[in-house]
Amino acid sequence: MRERLEALKAEALEELAQVTNQQQLNEMRIKYLGKKGPITEVLRGMGALSAEERPVIGQVANDVRAAIEAVIESKQAEYEKAETEMRLRAETIDVTLPGRPAAAGAAHPISKVIQQIEDIFIGMGYTVAEGPEVEQDYYNFEALNLPKNHPARDMQDSFYITDEILMRTHTSPVQVRTMEKKRGQVPVKIICPGRVYRRDDDDATHSHMFTQIEGLVIDRNIRMSDLKGTLLQFVQELFGKQTQIRMRPSFFPFTEPSAEVDVTCAMCGGKGCRVCKQTGWLEILGSGMVHPRVLEMAGYDPEEYSGFAFGLGVERIAMLKYDIEDIRHFYTNDLRFLKQFAHL
Ligand code: DAH
Image (cartoon, rainbow, N blue to C red; front, side, top):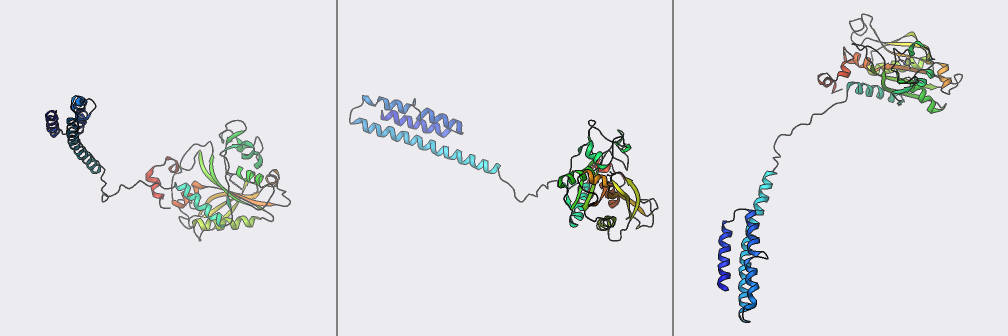
């Protein structure tokens, strides 16, 4: 029996010496150390031995087993180490390689101009209000003193969704919504930036969708001079201290009196050029004193309160400020165009 065990050991060690990979090693483990392996078999035959022989052979069997086990374990450790090394090598990061810069975006020029205008008015104590782009006929027209059948409500000018719901054609409905929310309290002092929609044929200066900023101030004793002073302050902050304004009589159903406001042309300083069509002036917004009927419908007594309002087109302001010749640039989103304004 001792010879058989020794022979087994020699055979196993020789075979193990040929092993070159993990799979073969697993097979060897099963073959020599498994429940059906030759050592187990030898041990099973121990019953036939004498009482003196039994512990001696048992010891030999254990030694053989331990010797085979030791070789298997050392090979196992070798393979594990090799595998770890391989993994580490594969996962090595070269921290000295130059990085791949992430392409950074920038806010859209219209967003930036809105931000600049907001900052100016916030500096004058205004808060920023918002309203829905899908609007009720009542807020878009009726409550602004544009009764049914008014020409400005023409189906040709507005995107109607139903008879009573449309895409807002201006940001003025937010005036009404704000006053309703304030429930007759003063002061009201807001600006409202947002998108507006009109059925227009798009060209260099017209777009079916554009951006407006509405302004509204309601309090006691608000006068036309407050409007003029506010707008002068605004344009001088936006276009520069040298900028002047002029107000021309105009008409809007929601203001009385109404005025269109021009600024001195920033391109030529008022001397006359291509941009201002040789007039020296550029129209930038509509404004006026809030119509008494508009105040009344929104719950403000026109005998006690008065206010001014104005509405300007953000694209037009951006085009003047940055000498952009076509409004469609803002929507076609050509990166070569947008990148020029990334630094603003
Ligand atoms: N809502 C007008 C428009 O879209 C602009 C405007 C004019 C707004 C006069 C006003 C205003 O608040 O007082 O053309």
